[in-house]
Image (cartoon, rainbow, N blue to C red; front, side, top):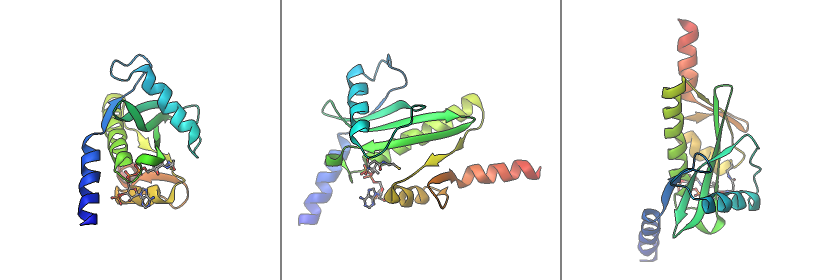
Length: 157
Ligand SMILES: CC(C)(COP(=O)(O)OP(=O)(O)OC[C@H]1O[C@@H](n2cnc3c(N)ncnc32)[C@H](O)[C@@H]1OP(=O)(O)O)[C@@H](O)C(=O)NCCC(=O)NCCS
């Protein structure tokens, strides 16, 4: 019974989380307030968002930013960092933000030519999850199997 209630509670919360696109500070959908909350969340977290990264999207629940993804492109390499507020973890927020970032990488690749993933993933739980999505790498650095295959095909031709 308890498990049933918990699962449905999680599902209910999941449906109330919106992912809001935040490309620039004057992005119409992402209010300035979301930027402030997202950077405050980053500051409070254990990870250091490098200055090359910009806020890409926020997870919002009842006007409160509960998660954020920051991304960067350097030398055709696409990277991101995700952060979820401790009170909202294990509810699939990071999954939604990662789906968003992966779609963004595809869209940017179509628009500007192929990008490759180059992630710095310190969190072991995140590493395990990303491996399920096809990311590879033994240290902190992770690339994606499809990018590696594409590179190998190009060098063979
Ligand atoms: C890592 C972090 C972003 C995960 O956010 P989250 O919203 O709790 O993650 P999700 O609920 O979407 O979980 C996605 C998957 O990651 C894995 N995972 C995440 N946190 C986990 C934990 N504490 N224990 C075990 N697995 C975990 C699971 O595989 C999970 O999928 P599942 O729920 O189907 O098992 C969050 O814990 C966080 O902000 N940590 C501090 C900052 C940080 O470490 N960022 C990542 C830097 S690499």
